[in-house]
Length: 113
Image (tube, rainbow, N blue to C red; front, side, top):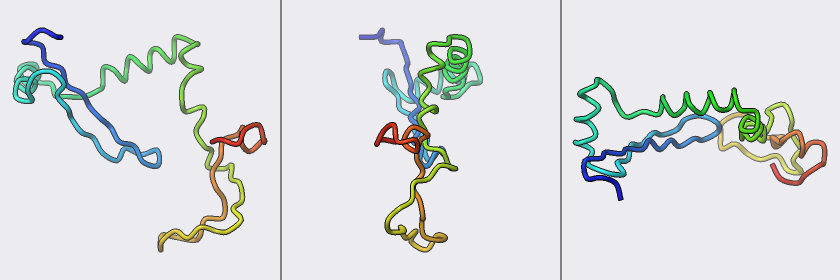
């Protein structure tokens, strides 16, 4: 259990279609008022800039971490597997003719992704 004077906040990001859809702030320890008072004294706000910068530094400088980046497993826009029946898009453009897939799936090495 943390010390009573400790304030700890969390930023929860929701991503849809590889784009940031929603950002929510959650206070884990303390109150939102206490967190805002501590940050306002320094002219700061709740954000993830320091953590994101640390993650980037680690990925770039530690090869073992860089190899585990999840972006290596994302579907490629240029690689598509044809669909048997085109999927309607509910009035947002032409029917989908293919499904995005990863390079491993396009090569037939896996059935996932």
